[in-house]
Length: 188
Image (cartoon, rainbow, N blue to C red; front, side, top):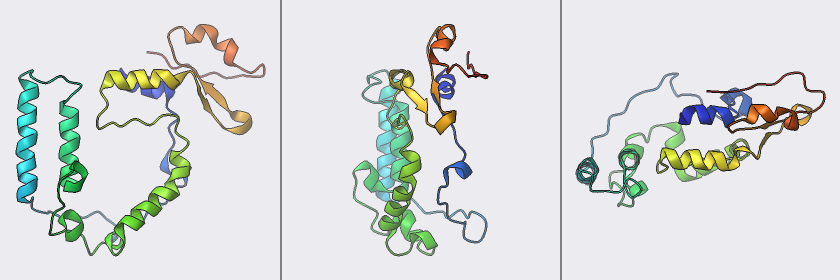
């Protein structure tokens, strides 16, 4: 149901339509680099398992902790322990193991900041941004519903509003320009 609601309000664009800067893959194909987990990462994994056991036993309010949060924390920790508030891997972790990668040489933080800056124009067109690592489905639906009646897709003379809600089809004429010849209705 959440995906249906998302599709009802999302203006999906392909990467080629956004003009994003995407680097070529060195060597032409992806390569898997296996990095052994540190003791700190293994200990954090045990903490995640304990949290999951508490949730399974029903001793935790889902708003305080849930499997989505645990999964997100695990992925963050596997990438870099600093993302979950722990000290970084002294060996450099995944970044240290991939030091021969062109995008990971030199000032990695600066490169990432530059990529974010270049993509901000495209990302800035989003009417809504959700933190999917900590947003429960009901909260996501509420957030989407709050902005859904105010979404307009700016395409110059081809601009159009996005109308979401029960009975929206009954009031289409309010939202259509007089010269409109086509309408797309998305329904369950």
